Image 1 (cartoon, rainbow over the protein chains, first blue to last red):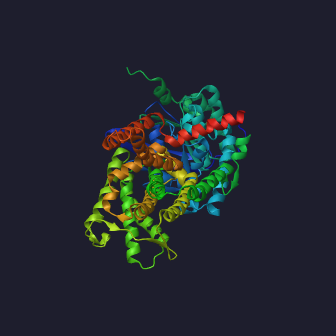
Image 2 (image 1 turned 90 degrees about the vertical axis):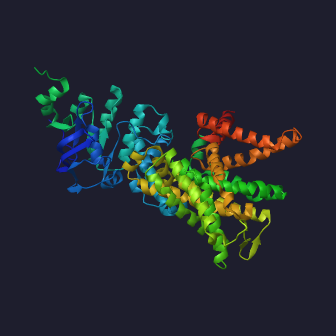
Image 3 (image 1 turned 135 degrees about the vertical axis):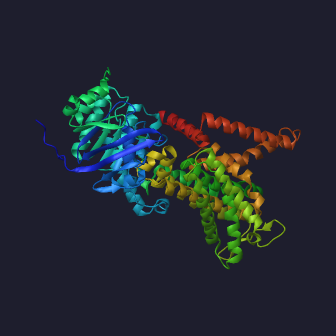
Length: 265
Length: 349
C-alpha cells in the first residue's frame, strides 16, 4: 500500500527522556519522553497551552528543562544554547514568525546559510577571494531554494511587507537553507487557507522525500497531521498521552477525551 | 530590462551602477573639489569636519543601524582614538602616521568591546544608558591621569603635525587629501561588510535575535564585533578630527553633545545605510552654517545669533521626531525614492 521511500525510516535520532519544564509554579511539561526516528515526519499535537512549543524550545536550547535529558544522534545535550544546537544540525521555524523583517527574502534565507559561511569579517571587508567565492556559492544555493519554494518573484522584497502565507514560506526557506538534517516546524500552516496548506504539505513531503530531512512539526489541522505524518505525539497539560501512528492515535480514547472533553459524573 | 543589466555582478561582487557611483564620487572628491574649491574655509570648516564626523557616523551606523544596539558614546571612542594617536606619535619614534591611526582605532576598539559587554544583558533604551559609561569614563580617565596628556597642565595640547614619508601635511587641502584617503578606504570596507555575511549577521541580530541564534549566529560574538568595529571607526575618526580639524587635543571637545550629534546624524541620515552617515553628517554640519548665512544675508543681522542657534535646536528636534515617525530610514531613503522616481520617469520616456 505504501510507496517505497527514498529514505526509509531508521533508528531514533532524537531521544527526549523524562523532561520536565516549570516556569515558577506553572508546569509546562511534566516527565515527558518520546523519540524521533531518522527520516520520519513526526507531528506533535495537543490543545492550546499543552506545552508543544515549550517542548520544541527545550530541544532548541531556548528553555532549559529542569529535569530529564535530551540526546541527539546518541549524544546527550547538556546545557545548550540555540546556536550550539544549530551547529549540531537542528533547525527550526517559529510559531509567531521570527523573520528578519527589514531584510529581503533572499537575505533572510542567506542568514540560514550562516554555518556554511566561514569567512570572518576581515575577509568580508577586504572581499578576499575566499569570502567572494563563498558568498557566490551560498547565494546560488539560496536562489535554488527560492525557486524550489516558488517565491523567486519576491526575492528582493523586504519580508515585513509580505503577506503572512508568504512569510511562512520564507521561514521554511530559511530553515531549509541551513541544510540541517533535523527540522522542527512550529505550526507551519497556521493561518493559511486550504490552498496554501496543500502547497505547504507538498513542500514538506518533498523535502522529506528528496533530502531525507527528519521533521518534527506542530500542527492543529488534523487532516494535515493525519495525512503527512508517520507518527503522532499527543500532548495534554504538559503530558504525553499518546504516541504512535496516526490511525492508532486517532482511535485512542484518551486523545478523544482530551480533544472532545469528557464528562465527569 | 535595463535594471537586470544593472543588477549584474560586474566586478568583485559590485554591480555596474555601484562602480559608476563610486567613480563619480571619486572624481568629484579627488579632482573636482580640489580644482574648484580654493578657499581654505571650505576645507578646514566644512569638508574636513564633515568627513571626520561622517566616519564616526559610519561607526555609529554599524552598531545602531545594522546591529540594532542602541549605543550612545561615540564621542568617548573618538576621544580614546584621538589621545591614543597623540601618545603613539609622541612616544613611539618615527611611527608612520597611518600606522598610528590604525593602532588608535584598535585601542578604541578594545574600549568598544569592553563597553559593549552590557549589550549581552540589556537592550534598547537601557543599553543606551549603560553605554553612556563609555562616554563619561573615557573622558574622565584622560582627564584624571596626566600621562595621557603628557602631564600638560594647560588643558589644551597642540596636536603634532601629520608627517607622511617625511612630508608634512599641514595645509587644509593636504589634510583634506589625507582624510579623504582614509575615509574612502574605510567606507569601502564598511560597505563590503554591510553587504556581506558580516552585515547580514548584524541585521539578523537586530531584527530577531532568537531566530538569529537558532540559525547558528553567536549573539555574543556578533554584538561585540559590531561594538568593536564601531569603536574602531570612531577612534580613527576621533584621531583625524583632533589632528586636522581641532588641531588640538582636549577631552572636553569629545563631550556628550558630540555623541548626540553623531546619533542624530545616523537617525536623520537613515538607519541601516552607509550613505545615510554621510548625508546625516552633512546635514547636521551644514544646517547651522546655512541658518547663519540666512540670518546674515537675508535679515542682515537683525536676528540675534543666540536666537539662530536656538532655532537650529528646534529644527533638529522637530526633524528627528518627523523622521522617526514618517521615514525611519531617513534622508538616504528619501534620496533613494527621488532617484527611483526620476529613473522611472526617464525609462518611461
